[in-house]
Image (cartoon, rainbow, N blue to C red):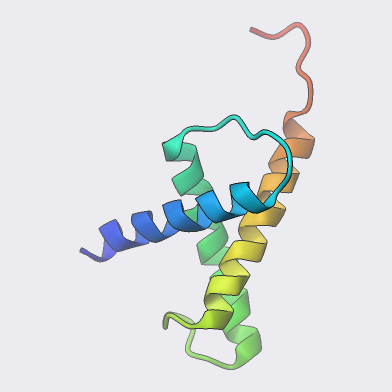
Length: 88
């Protein structure tokens, strides 16, 4: 049950990050969930450490950190993805 909740939480964070970032991001539900999960792991860890909370507990600082990290990852993916000429 914990893994399923983590995937759903990642999907929600990924959707919010994509909604807050202007522009068009062409990714499906799976990549949105992966974006949110990676942002949740990195941002939640850093956010909870900065707030002085236990790392694996669910707190507002962890959620905000997850969201900020997901947005930063989305920006980085957008910069790396750019225009691809000559590829399939």
